Length: 119
Image: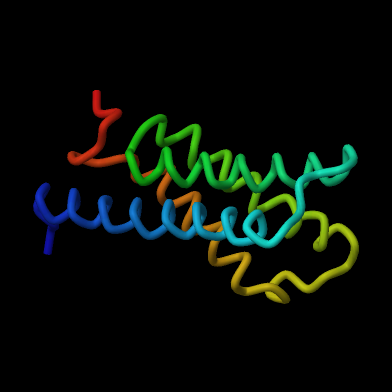
């Protein structure tokens, strides 16, 4: 059974809102409980969380969807790949792996009909 265009657009909107909202809140929470950065390492950590929040906002709005999705996939995927390179099990972090796959799926799916960055 083929899905209608309307159904696909609703699915892409739900995927966009879920992944973008998750990214925004996942980046916001550590910043709310952290002091202002005092050195370069803390500033880079803040920058990482701000980039995650920015990718989430772009995804929710549907702006620059491929760039925001791949940026989020890099932010999520880097710790996973580094863990795998140092001997972690492939399915050792299922939550992180799921988030990585969902970020890639949203990049491949695009923004859909109801996006500010259409066209």
